[in-house]
Amino acid sequence: MKRILVVLLFLFPTPALADDATPSPSPEASTSAPASIYDIPVAPYTPPAEASQGVGGWAVVHPGTDVVHGVVVATIETFNAWGGRMPSEYMGCPAGCLLRFQTRATADGNVAGWHGPDVKFDSTDGTFDMGSTHVDASGTTTVKQKLIPSQTASDGWNLSTGLVNIRTEFVSSRVNDIGIKLTKIQERFDSQAASEIAIENWKTFNFESDQQVSDNLDADVAAELVADGYDTVTPEVGGFVETVKTLTDSVKRFFGGFFNRQ
Image 1: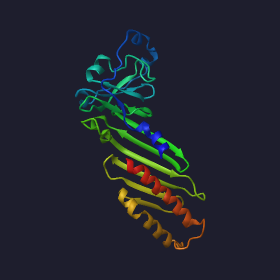
Image 2 (image 1 turned 45 degrees about the horizontal axis):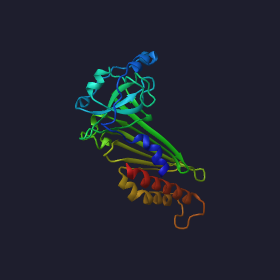
Image 3 (image 1 turned 120 degrees about the horizontal axis):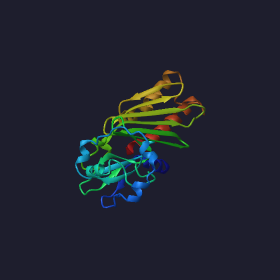
Image 4 (image 1 turned 120 degrees about the vertical axis):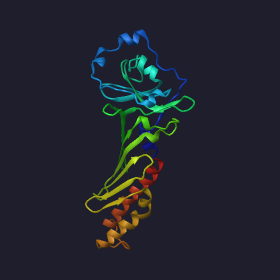
């Protein structure tokens, strides 16, 4: 699970301390910025009202890719003074990259935010799309979610309050040429999660909460096996029943190890 955590670090807040030096304009940076970045069409942007409530975390966004290269400490006054653009290079994003409000600060003025190659600004609604994919021996995990800046915690600590449309998929490695797919969907970070568990070419099981998965998955699968005439008491070695158990066990391990940390 350590490898999963390392890959998913792009999805979790990265700190930017308020007493860190916020990049400041320099004549060299402003005049030497490549003209091409200013030629890239940029959709109109109006910071949300929360951006005017003091210090916040502002994403540094490349206008050509929408990728968030980093998060800086700034205010609406900074945004206006710099014309909504970084005056100098920052974390690989050249001078002229866009400033887009992302999170609010803690009471002591520190901020945190999300950045990385899979974090992108959505200019259609001022939100951020975030995702990651991880592959290991157990299977492939894909996470997608959206961050609404105006909904991040007013105290700046629990940034997950701004997360919506959270979709996590786990597709297992194949066992005896059969796979299992787990899909978990949450409207918000703190809402109940609906889970769908599909065993390839056989059955699909739906649950309305994590607790239902924990309480009912094994019993529901066993009932369906019996209904289809399989011997679940003394199953054939390496047969379908054992294969299904192996697959559902992989989902349970993933469920317990990953989802319970969300």
